[in-house]
Image 1 (cartoon, rainbow, N blue to C red):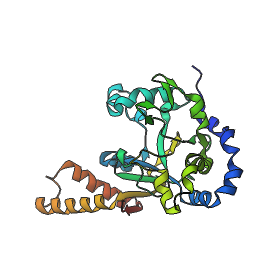
Image 2: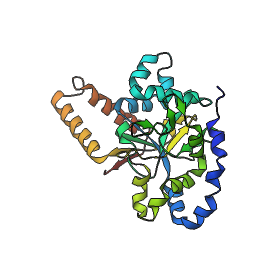
Image 3: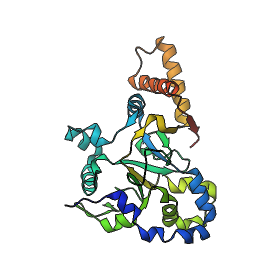
Image 4: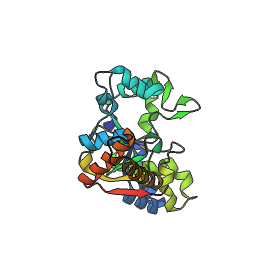
Length: 271
């Protein structure tokens, strides 16, 4: 099977780019808002966040379990096969890392309560190694994967028509949501574009390096943040130190130590 260069294909999606001038006239304020507010985000749980902050680089699941098939299969469960099918169709697919376009929300909290935010202008991302896809590449609708014809076959025409090159995400936002844009206010755009509850988001795919030192901010839900602080203070008081307390609280304490050590900007959001 001849593998496709996903990123080059994204630069050649003329069906999308031919609408750019029209959108500049029809939705100028939306384009400005999206351009000003957009970043990409990855959500992680406690242990994954600690590992990332400690190592300094985010690696994908293929790299994490490079020599072990079973842990990867266990981790992805029913998504193991479709993820493998998807990645096997593209050059460097085994190096793909996935994130979400984010205009200021807590991201996709179903994947983890911590939201890591990176700039799209990060020098590690370019049109040669990064692009956007209109939906989650493993989006399920009515029990079927949206971008698949059957369990072994991708709908490549649909995928290629839904791609946007690195700095064309703003056009993709309008194409995806234009029927809703006239019904909402600008302040509601972030939730429309990246909504964990409805699994609605524009996917970012890259083979570029994602580094701790490139973090714009780390977002934490206010209730989680306050709960963590209360638990840590209580545990420390009761045990006269952390030597006997729950491992999960130890990890959280080490996370906050790493945040402080690396001077990571932290946003506490009410959500």
